[in-house]
Length: 339
Image (tube, rainbow, N blue to C red):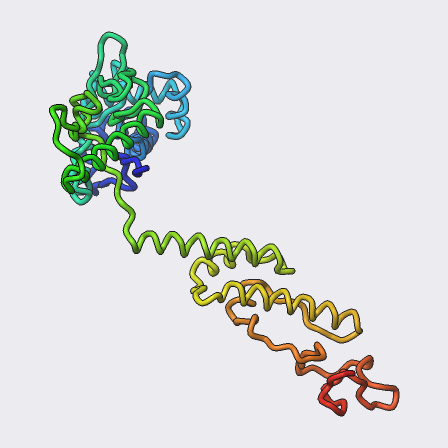
């Protein structure tokens, strides 16, 4: 399914001379710093709201808006009323329970130009039921979209999937006609999506983007690396630095069966260390998993006898009472191999 296009922004212009304008001058005169802070917190909410239009018809949502702006509801409503009287926000929209600031939208023009999309438009107000968004119905089933976002075209995922299936069917039939697979008849196959959906808005349905070869390979690599991490984390004895280990595993190049070799080597090392401890030999603990992977410790080689040369002094359990090395020690005649 194609990604939903959302009309939100992560930032908006804050001009250095903003406090000298009429709006902030009056807000600061009447409400002090609360007026200044509320105005810019309100603009932040507009920036992060889809379509840049805030629905305040629901009392709970209205109280939540004022809570996020860190102001009491009674004082917040008074400030919003002042903004409407100053035309800082749309008075007509506010009378219907919505906050819309056209000047704020106009200041976002460069950003939407970079996105190659049109600026969000002022919603149409329905005076009959105080509903906004676009006054449209679902282009598949005809259900009213008053409770959906402003640019909504479908009432549910079910209708959206029906639209995509219809688009795919039209594409397949068009391809068949181009290849002369379908014979001509008195009732030719309809390939126009408008005819399939019987809606004037059907042409606005986004086309499903075909996954490229590179994107497919990238997706397969990501799934393979995550599967490797899951298997590795399950058997690695030290459960630390999980987030770092996961991030490192997603960037590893696991070509040529490297993932299987790593897991096999890890299982072999775990068994070898366990056998050495059982026989009374010293063996260092496993390091953090991220360090084990970065240092390519799966390439560590274990001698036949299971002894690891750690470079540390030999403990008393590895020598006899006379000081001679016991079987299994590297200095024992025969290279440490035991019969």
